[in-house]
Image (tube, rainbow, N blue to C red):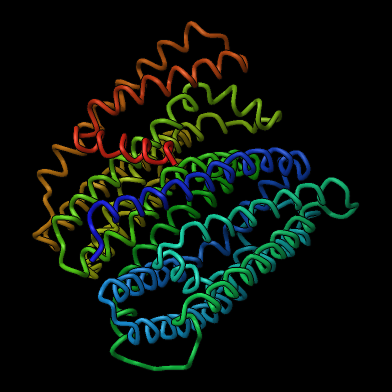
Length: 509
C-alpha cells in the first residue's frame, strides 16, 4: 500500500524530471525554430507546416487509440493484474498496427489528392512538398505503432527515462539544424528527411528499453475480445472527439492558406510552436499526475483522486502563469529576438494561443477524470460536434471579410465552453467527484489570481525598457509577484507546508 506521502513524493519527483526535460526542450525548440525559419525561408517554412498538416489531419485515429492504450494499461496496473496487463499491451499493439494501415491508405489516397489539388503551393516547390508529405506519412505510421511503448513508460511512472529519451530527441534536432546549415541540398527536402531519421532512431531507443525492462512489452499475437472490445468502444467515441479536434486545428490552417496564403501559415506555425512549448511545460505536471489519478480511481480511492485532480490543476495553472504572463506582455520583443525575421501576424496569433493554453490545460486535466471512468461517449459526442462547428463558422467569418484574429477569439471562447461542459460530464459520470469543492477551492481562486497577476506585470512593464535587460528584470519581478500571490490565494495552508517540506528535504540531501 503506497502512502499519501510516498505518492506525493513520487509525483513531485516525476514532475521535476519532466519539467527539467521540457525546459531544455523549450530552449532548444526556440533556437532551432529560428534557425530553421531562416534556413528554409518564410515560404518553405509555411509549406512544411501546411503539408505536414495534411498527414496530421489523419492523426486523430492514433490520438484516439493512444488515449485508450494509456488508460487501460494504467488501469490494469492499478488493479495489479499482471497477466491482463500483458494481454492489454499486445492487444493495443495489434490495434495500433491496424490503425497505421488505415492511416497509410487514407494518406496515400485522400491526403495525396488534397495536397495535389487543394493546397496553395508555388509550382516550383511542388516536388519538395511531396517529399515532405511522404516523409511525414512514414513518420506518422511509425509513431502510431510506438504508442503502446510510450504508454507503458508513463504507466510505470518512469518519467526519468521518458525525460532522458526526449532530451536525446531534442539534442538530435540540434544536429538537424547544424546539418541544414552545412549541406548543399534542397533545404526543405533535407529537413523532412532528417526529421524522419531522428523519429526512427528515437523510436528504436524507446522500444529497446521497454522490451528489456517491462515484461508486458514483449509482443505476442492475442485476440481477446474481452480486452479489445472495451478498448475499441472507448477509442470509438474518443476517436470522434479527436477527429473533430484535429479537424478544427488543421482546418483552421487550411482556411488561413486559402484566404491568406503560405505567409500567414508561417505565422500560424510560429504561434503553434509558442503554444506547444509553453503548454508542454505545464503539461509536465499533468503527465506526472495522470497515472496516479487513474490508479486511485481503479482502486476505488475517490477522496485521493479528488485531491490529486485539484492539486494537478493548481500546480499546472500556477506554472503556466509563471512562464506565460511575462512572455505575453513582451511577445513582440521575444519574437524579434528569437526569429529576427518575424512573419506578419505572428505576435497577435502567439498571444491568442497563450490565452487559449489556460483553457486547453484545464480541459486536459478534466479529461483525465473522464478517461479514468472509461465512459467517453458523452464527452466525445458533445465536444466533437462543437469542435467541428467551429470550422464552418470560421469559414463564414472569413468569407464575410472578418479578420483572422476574430476567428481565434471564437476558438478561445469555444475552448472555455468545452471546459464547462466537461466538468458537468465528469460530475454526472462520477458522483464521487466533488464539483462544488473543485470550482470554489480550485477554479475560482485561479480565475481571480490570473488577471491580477497580469495587470501587475503589465503595469510594471511600462516602466522598464523593451530590451534584454528590461525583459530579465521584468521576468524576475513577475516570478516574485506570481509566486507570492499564487502561494497565498491558490494553495491551501497544508499544500504550502507540504511543498515547503519537499523542497527542504531535497535541499538537505
